Image 1 (cartoon, rainbow, N blue to C red):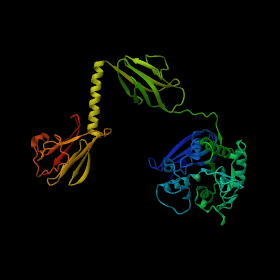
Image 2 (cartoon, rainbow, N blue to C red):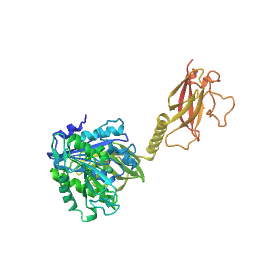
Image 3 (cartoon, rainbow, N blue to C red):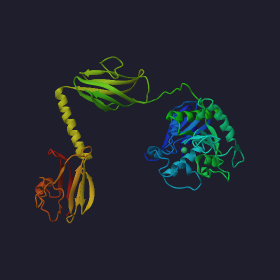
Image 4 (cartoon, rainbow, N blue to C red):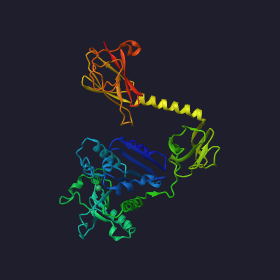
Length: 486
Ligand SMILES: [Zn+2]
């Protein structure tokens, strides 16, 4: 079930909402719903079903930001995220050939299923593409002829008859829209033309189109549907986006979907983060954080992360004036940074200014905490038990039976890939001394045959022994425990 049905039918108008399906996957699908101040027709825009057609998806991407006076939009800028990331038409096959009736399973087909659901909520559907060359009803040259897709408005039929007998006058609709669009394009070479693929006709050269989204929309939903193709050969990406926009705008006009200008948007947001330079070193802070500095350190806020676009200021209390954003101050006492949108406070960060002595203690404590954190959370130990590899985190306990054979293989932390770390099984003495003192990597440690010095075990009980990782400067950086079962 689509929860968007509720969103679109909810009472708040105007409104914008956003839904994410398959979040975090290669086929994550973002759907935007824009509802006008007054209800009206709903236009569905789908772009990016083939990842190498940026004109289509970057045009669609502009429409979720509209506020509508009348009518509604459902916008899917990036139908095929995986193909867009890879810049490939279809890494798992062409998604726009998957709308025929045989249902398949897999992530790409789940997306197709969602797109089909969205069609049932729309009054008209535009499928945005970029195609090669320039479509022309007459043959001019290899780039400009009736077989080329670029700069065309495609329909599967001039008039489509639905199952219920109603007729969709696709060519008439296209002609009126193209009249409007082409009147705005001064370069005649860039004019768009109507392209009828006659998809249902037995003799059509475009029988492949029977598997496409637009043909599905006609057949199953009796939904007027068009392919919009900008040319891949246009001189700039901006041109491709512009021609898509012109077609979308003309269809919106035809459907009575009206954008509000200027739009009224009152965002409710807060401080997501701020970037503060302390003596030229960047610090990322969140709302309500405390920034600890040494007295008279130089403090400068260089970035304010918020959804508000304009009217944002930062006031360093007791310094400068009301608007201290991007200014530099030597801060000698405890104070606060206050973030405002116009007169409204939306975030704050405390500053603690410590004396040299206090700061030295603070820095030591920080260092110790970081060290503990690294030791306890981020260090990984790789061992083999009976030739089978195991990965443990610092602080973990490995249980060993008397007949088990243990080999210590390696240990590493995050961000320190060039480190040399030795591993010492405390209380175990190898028969032949190792090349590095206290390094027991590479030995076979057999609890039932090995000599273990009980006094090195936990509380001298002879049950739990520590395996300690030590860095090249001799500092312990983490440990795991080996627990012997009887
Ligand atoms: Zn395409």
